[in-house]
Length: 259
Image 1 (cartoon, rainbow, N blue to C red):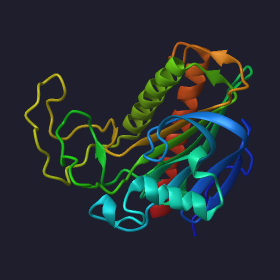
Image 2 (cartoon, rainbow, N blue to C red):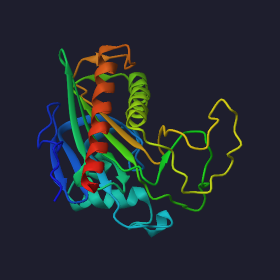
Image 3 (cartoon, helix red, strand yellow):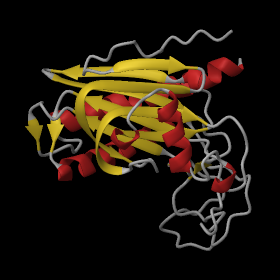
Image 4 (cartoon, one colour):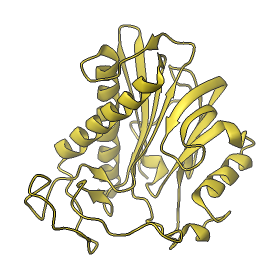
């Protein structure tokens, strides 16, 4: 049985109570937090009492195959099962095994950033701009492989700084998977591959992410308000390090579980 060396603790240093189940990791807060999420349930900017990474354990062809008929409704039902207010919750979906998640914490002066990451990539690793494999119509659905990143900090950020933070998170994610040597998959017949040489000249290329990555960034509205999350700032550097370490550990877990 796999023994996870990077398991998330029950309590986050930034505030938050962690519930680990077979197919999910959920973080509850004692008071209202503020999040920026790519999830389909309460995505975008939202006030939150709970965030969640939920594993989908079976194959589907369209969203309609999910309980509730959509990703958002399915995730809402999962929150209802644990008696959590749906309107103050947001979540990500993944096919990655939840007990392979990885936790990381980085501190610099009084800044704390924590991450919880899952890193399934074998079927969906992709280099952005090298072709697409489906067009979203009538609920067409690509089962997520997904590098899902939950980020928590003791700082507050302006809305624009939260967008900048997403950029920094993405840069750190790409650095982590390229340092790990993850290559873009060739499992699908990609459409529109005739692209400018400015994107790539090779058929076999390093991935920049997966096609189904997700991010939830959660801030503490009672913390010091910051206006910059770029990689030159103390906060942005701390953020990037926490994301990088979390992804590297999640990839390590995925490899370790196979050996």
